[in-house]
Length: 482
Image (cartoon, rainbow, N blue to C red; front, top):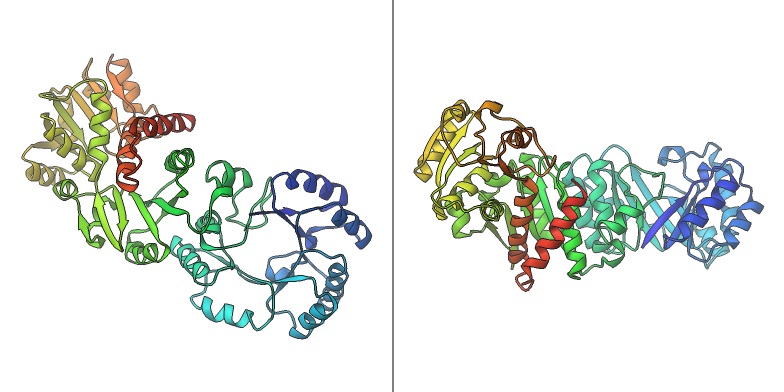
């Protein structure tokens, strides 16, 4: 369920917010500490117009609110608010227990939410915090902490699953994951917004519903995702959630940003959360291998993975990058006996080299760091050299796997050749612009992305046999966001 805020600050503005939010929300939270001119009579009139559940919150400043009166004045105001019969009353965990008992006796129908906030980090002792909170009898408990890393969010999600139903969430950009996956961990609702967020890390209701299809998520929904150091340019949350929705897979796909040193702890938490499958991108395609229980034969030959499958508590690595890239190219021309020059020597280059050789191409690799190119070339028995050699050597197909939009000079692009850049965004890179000027045919990065994703679904959901339909959906959604 979605809980949307009513922020005021005036009665008139609150009325407009209620009308707009009620069309989307399952319940409303009145942030009364943000109101400036809403007296009890006016508030009662607003409350009487609403048919969905309502939360009244009068948040103190030290708990992230704006209430400026004394604590004695605030407690008196809370009693007045309770008399208006909101469905829920949200109170901080340091409120006097005697006051809680008075509320329960005076308003037995009122449901209390006890809240804890930490605005600097996510404490390691969440168990102790919840134990302390439960000393105050309440209908629901809420813990909101700042996430300084994705691991904080994953710890919170794991904690929510263990103690469901719990309103657990992390604030900050690294906390967005907890908003998307809240329902899958048993949270009764998620706090969202239409126009103005009340905490960093909140996602707007439109995104939750249109991208993640939030209304269909349950505790039985399967979780998939992308792990990367940088996720800003990835299209995967758009495309994969569209496929999952259209095929009614009861699944959700999220983007997960990690640092290299977090991989070990991440995989422990991923298994706790029951994640079913992952996409892997730079720089983790080779770094994740030591954490795997099994490597597919092709992935072992490549020495890099881009797809992980969690199966019976075992983690298996695959690679669909090479197949995706070569399928995209061969939709335009065969690579058999063609001369392919690959720029870059990372995990994607490994996969493309392996698949191109399987399909009978003649491959050469060029890289800024010659030693890395020579090492990779020796593994596959191909030629290697520095990027500067692109100017002097003939090829039929040029593939850029580096992160650079123009890794070679425009003069190195051979007229009428085929040029591919594996980056999905931007769609038209500087390299492809130059290729267009040289009358080259070219393959966009999103075409490789779509083709490799089709193969990922064959691994994640083997029963999903309609590859053509998967391809069509992925391509349609990718093109919307390029």
